[in-house]
View 1 (tube, one colour):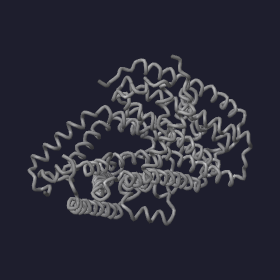
View 2 (spheres, rainbow over the protein chains, first blue to last red):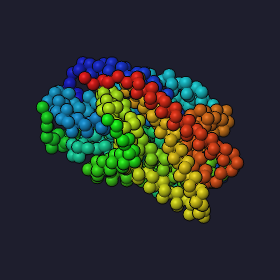
View 3 (cartoon, rainbow over the protein chains, first blue to last red):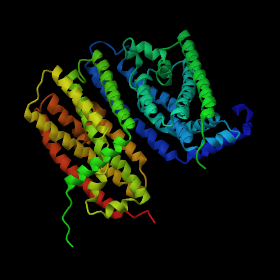
View 4 (cartoon, one colour):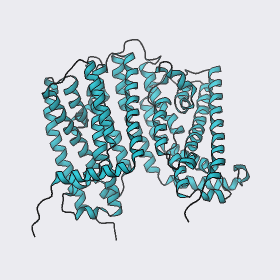
Length: 274
Length: 276
């Protein structure tokens, strides 16, 4: 049944329950967020060492401060676009038969997962904002100041789209479970490629051809690299509008792919278990 | 009735064989894990190849030029592969044994509990990392035109073993806390993040942020020694300062093992069965 046909009150209740459920793990969230900054320390020192022995003036247009700011901003991008346990959760529900409750109840699976994920992220941001604010305050010297309003608006939009793209992309991988049941290996390969080509590991501007063109052509850069470039002011004006449009197109593309996978997946699904 | 002590070597061989049979039951999964390890190595090497397009070495006058640094990377892969093969799957299992009360079965067996808990499962796909590491090391040594002497190779093996001992001790200490905490998922994340400091040459830890970190992770929690010393033996040889560090590494390994043994003993004596 489509999402829109369900009473908004139902979705509000699901959202509220998910919020309360996620708040149970608030201490784990706060600790996890602080730990995520540990690798940044080594990244800062590694890049400091690299810049000490630099052959030229910069690394693919990045100065040392830009690189550190880049890694810090990538963490924000990843906080929006990463979807822990989404694909595994969907595949698990297909495998053990739990998914059949969504086939007989008037609740849409993808809509339900989206609402619970929004709740999860809101709780996460609410708690993680403390550690994030502290680290960004300590590292404020690496930034050249606040960007202008247009850039900030573009950045906020790109983060929301990164969240939606991350959600639909990983939900689609989970829905492949209708055909393969076990998607953990596929997911692991995806995570590795994602780490490399989303800009999590290094700024994609460092890539030589043809890898740079490949990275530009696939949607992974919109999960972390693109929003970060927007904040750093490296994508502006028409390029920003164009970039956001492509990002939105990828979101719509994967949302449609999810619907198609759900539609055909349910048709071939056989429910086992009591 | 007196019983002869168990042969630990035979027990280890049996546990390894059982794990191998188990892994071979899931050959597809095993193959994917091997491919993933190779893929990961390719990604790491690609990343540093990109870096070396822009810089001559990692840190000014550190001596960590391209192929020397690849030897460091290879050493990291070998040690991480050994940890993944022998230690990490068992440490993750230890927490579940405590939570479900299944530790009782290990305690009543006539063999040292720490040995059984530490080595009951061998993850053979971890060897893929070791293989990749060795391949990368040979490739780097060929490019450096350096044939390591028997002494260097022997010292490398000794210090890889020491590195394993240090990292194993850290894992055992963290896993032991499961007895008091019930479950410690965050602490395993903590292990992953804290060992990040060991994965880079210690020369990069300089300045107001780097110096204290180098001192803490060399002398208090000596994880920096785990990879740095064997990598230096193979890539650069041991100078006077490095030799002192290497000697310290031997004592640090023994101290870490002794401390982890003591903490494991404390944990076992605090254990209360959770089963009915």
